[in-house]
Length: 70
Image (cartoon, rainbow, N blue to C red):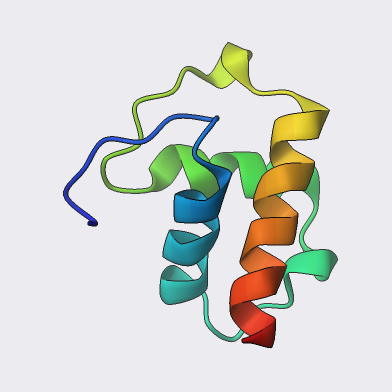
């Protein structure tokens, strides 16, 4: 599914892709400014920087944490 386009509302897919890209990272230790940059850099990400919100970043962080804990 890595070829599909994603936006800020695709928290589960973004969490999975971040886990693949940064398997050694504890998602809870990532600052939101860094998380925002990492999401923006993902292949297939088509969201706009200004469309992000704290709620979207929290959802992504929790989805990423779910991947780590599985």
